[in-house]
Image (cartoon, rainbow, N blue to C red; front, top):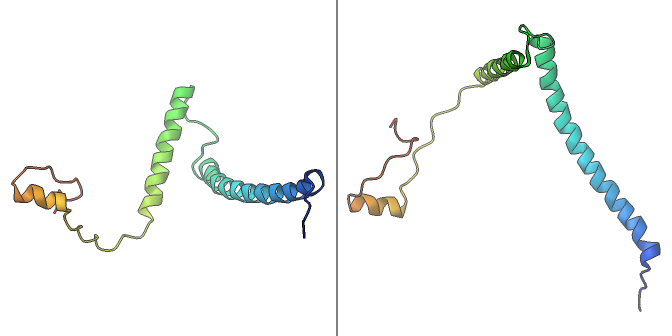
Length: 115
């Protein structure tokens, strides 16, 4: 049995349904991103008085916005629960073992400087 496929008749409905699905996924993603951004902008505008600048001039206003954003980020980070214990250090790699066996100096990672 041979099934005929007419491009002018059969393809447009398939393309149309595929485009609808793609558009819906894109819209859902964009709405999710926008809702997060709008919450942040609303917090700045209403919670931190960003509707009015304290200083005149674009440079000074920009500096005020940047410093306020830094303060809000610090405020958000300080509200996070403290993390559990530090994870145990990783086992040295074969290359690191080789360097140690041959007494070849290598600087330690910034992660292990405190230990």
